[in-house]
Length: 74
Image (tube, rainbow, N blue to C red):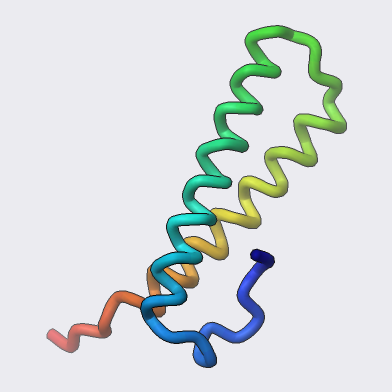
């Protein structure tokens, strides 16, 4: 599953499934980054790439959450 290109074309059910997948990938990246830090074996380029991917996933997660959360007019 890649980044959603057009969230408006997807059903809420599909978005919820994708949201869980992206959250899991985000957690996995977080754990991988932490493990590399603890071992001290990671080069800076690898860490930078993992962190960049983690941020990309965070943005996608936020977009999907915004799409699933109804607007409330106060």
